[in-house]
Amino acid sequence: MVRVVVSSIVAAQADGRQRFDVEAETVGEALRALPVADLLLDERGEWSRNLWVYVDETDARERGGPACPLAGAHEIRIVAALSGG
Amino acid sequence: MAIGVRALVGTRWGLFVLWGLDDRRGWRVDGPMLDGWGVYHATVDARDGTVYAAANHIVYGPTVQRSADGGKTWKRSKKIRLPQWSGLTVNATWHIEPGLPQQPGTLYLGADPGLLFRSDDAGETWEPNRSILEDPTRDRWVPGRGGVLCDSIQLDPGEPLRMYICITSVGTLRTDDGGQTWLLVNKNVATEYLPVLYPETGQCVHKLLLHPARPERLWQQNHCGVYRSDNCGNSWVRLDENGLPSGFGFPIMIDPKDPDKAFVIPERSHEYHYGTNRRLAVYGTRDAGQTWGEMSDGLPQQSWATVLREASASDADSLYFGTQNGSFFALAEGETWVEAARNLPPIMSVEVTQWSG
Image 1 (cartoon, rainbow over the protein chains, first blue to last red):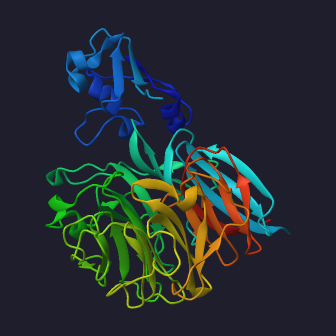
Image 2: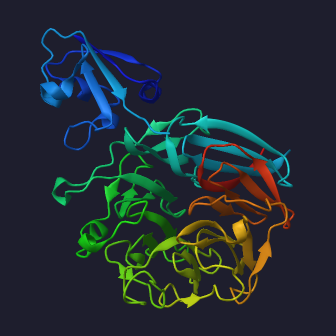
Image 3: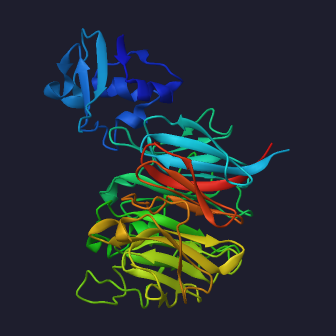
């Protein structure tokens, strides 16, 4: 079981729910299990370049992106990287 | 019982609802709904009252949201996808057009890059129009600054199989068979940015409107002028040398009661996106574009405010528009502009419906 934490704007699309506990072996599988998967993943099952996905504080892109294994992981945190101004 | 107007005002950061009294002088602002989403267009389906919003987010992508309870709760369309073979992805949703009264549950969606979708289940799922998706000239469609937008969709109320769409850098297309085949209808519409002035395609339409009482009459604000067609787009007449200070602009408004009236908000030029003489000014015609007159009473005397292509609307009693610096204006008693709201986020779209309660 891994806990997925999403941002407030995504939570607003899931009746305000910000944390989800899911059974999954990879990050892609975990994200696909969410009711907001369509906002996080494109047609190819990948996430936007402006989205950062951390598995216990490690950038999931460095470990295969959607294929990043979750064995022993506790938390997936999804952060939108927006800047400017 | 009060009667007034409800304006759906889509902004960079959510959807606002402005409630105006019948005299268009007193207003109340509700919102934002869909907080944090760029609402490129929102409209009310007159057939059942559902509100639809073309909602886009730089990270979470494009979608369509719908609300059956006036914006209290929203449902998101299923992922709006294209076939894998197309090699395309949907960049943004731009315009939602409810179908005709005899087509319950049918809606149309214009999107980037140059896409038209249809839904037959009230916005739950969307299917791309294959003729537009597979157009053999698609690889030559040149994106404008905002992309390859399909932002005008007009249905002919008397001919259910006839529809018009506009795609930036392509021009106006008409179907007479419900979307199976499309005809380019750009005759006499200029492309001053191309080596050929009047090509078959390549026109940059900013907004197209069909007159509901005289559906063969179309108006368009183009990148290169203001035009009218009286024959379903088969040919166009350029109108901006008749008193308009500039042919460049984005929105256009019409009077649903009078096919000879139209209203535009000219900008200095494509290189200077602000009003001529650094003023925000509306120009109107009452004689089908033979002459134009300024209607600026109540608007700021000096302003660099701009109005986007979807950010104006009209009804039988008034005109409405919203600016990129977050002001919303309504025309009161046909002569004076009232600033109904200010300091909203940049306004992307405006639609109005009547309310009573």
